[in-house]
Each structure stands twice: as structure tokens, then as C-alpha cells.
Image 1 (spheres, rainbow, N blue to C red):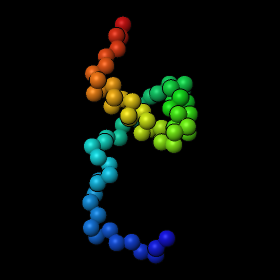
Image 2 (spheres, helix red, strand yellow):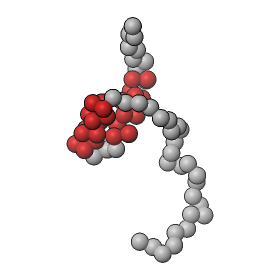
Image 3 (spheres, one colour):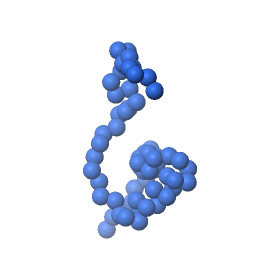
Image 4 (cartoon, one colour):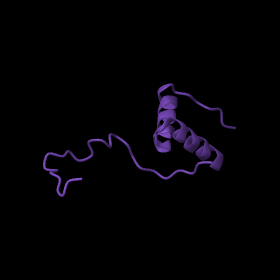
Length: 66
């Protein structure tokens, strides 16, 4: 590890993309599923949840809510 790093050419938010931090309530079973899946494939569970939601949004999947 270096003693000092040069961030003079850094671009703020370069890797954050167009993401927005929110608070959401998730069922314990659902969260456990994504955490387990995360351990199996080596990706953060938040990333997996975002990928699933993004896929649903792109496919315009709608659930019937009664």
C-alpha cells in the first residue's frame, strides 16, 4: 500500500452510476435468499437485488395486487 495517492484526476461519482440510496423493508426470508445466493456466486447481495429489480423493470413485469 502506498503512503500517498494522487486523486487529482479523479472524477467524482464515476463508478456510482445513476444509483440512488433508499431505505426499504425486505422480508427476512427474501434477504436470506439473496445473501445465500451472494455467497454462492460471489457478488454483493445488494447488487443481485438490483439486477433482479432492473430485469423486472426492463421487462415491464407487473404483479396483480389485490
